[in-house]
Amino acid sequence: MKKTILVTGGLGYIGSHTVVELQESNYDVVVIDNLSNSISEVAEKITSITQIPVKLYIGDITDESSLKTLFEQETIGGVIHFAAHKAVGESVQKPFKYYRNNIDGMITLQKVMHQHHVKTIVFSSSCTVYGDTKHSPIAETHPVTEAISPYGTTKLVCEQILKELCRYSGFKGIILRYFNPVGAHPSTCIGELPLGVPDNLVPYITQTAAGIREKLTVFGNDYNTADGTNIRDYIHVVDLARAHVKALDYALSMNQDCEIFNLGTGTGHSVLEVIQAFEQTSGISLPYVIGARRTGDVEQIWADATKAVQILNWTPQYNLHDMMDSAWKWQVALSQNNQKRASKPA
Ligand code: NAD
Ligand code: UFG
Image (tube, rainbow, N blue to C red):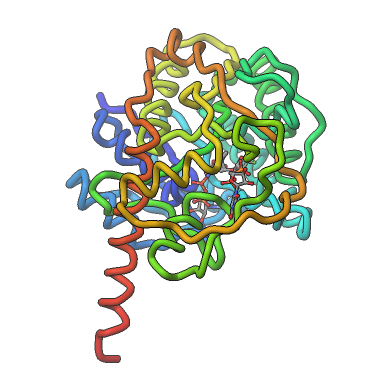
């Protein structure tokens, strides 16, 4: 019989891509999302890819009674937990918003899971838990350090809570530490929907190329790297989504335990290399200037993802050019949809 998986934050960027992969891997999916950073139309877009309806609960995971109702109505076999706020800069300005949503959300979810004897959970963490590392690639055995933002604190605290529940309360947990997720689904039906001015590099690049932003500012070219700009491990969101299905399969088959996996390609790229890859795939010359360093940026970090490759049998399929190509096609589709909406009579 098909298992039903609850995906919290399943209308968001990574969640929506994961729902597609789960449905295509023969899981039934139930989504809970409060639309704080997504729109309900994403559910229809997912269905347009998979031809399978998405069972959607509009609700907040910090609300215990909504979660209880969901768990009473559905036979949940496991959970993939994405729902959280994720803007590092905003978390510095509004720390309580982050503690409340991300930590309270995790605790409430796990309490209701516990009450309903659902013990399998895959949790979205981040390479931010490694802090300002000096030597990449970084393996899961690398010590985590004090967080550099309230957002990072929420990931560290949630990781710790999950580890304890696995140790003492029979949970089976997988912690996935993402490096830099980018790109969009090849259908161009789903992708990242940044609200306002994007903080992240790739949406800023695509919005600049689309004429929404005047120019990109590269945050510093005086780092100790080959071209002076920061190095990151960019990973295609579809590869990331597929890793969640593998992680879930693995979690469902393991005994009480907690496992941590890095998810990255294992290759670092500088900001200038990303710009160059974008220009080559899109054929557009990107206006950019070199600016000051951004406070809090780590100089260089990329993953040792050997554990995910060996244990989850997961290998990323997409390279940097594929990532830029899909990100750009998604931006073009978004701009066309916005134009259509704007030209419709009121
Ligand atoms: P996203 O904002 O696109 O998706 C999160 C979804 O959760 C949104 O649809 C939002 O409406 C929903 N949500 C937030 N709080 C909720 C709540 N209390 N109840 C119900 N729904 C709620 O973010 P994303 O990029 O898809 O990230 C997913 C997860 O991955 C997050 O936990 C994030 O911290 C983590 N992560 C993201 C990145 C990244 O660069 N995108 C990197 C590392 C880790
Ligand atoms: N960058 C620019 N100009 C921009 C935006 C970004 O030069 O307009 C540079 C940054 O300085 C950095 C690189 O592009 O060197 C990547 O920046 P992003 O903001 O896209 O990603 P980060 O690596 O800073 O942040 C990501 C996730 C966070 C997570 C963090 C962990 O977005 O959620 O990794 O290190 F916490």
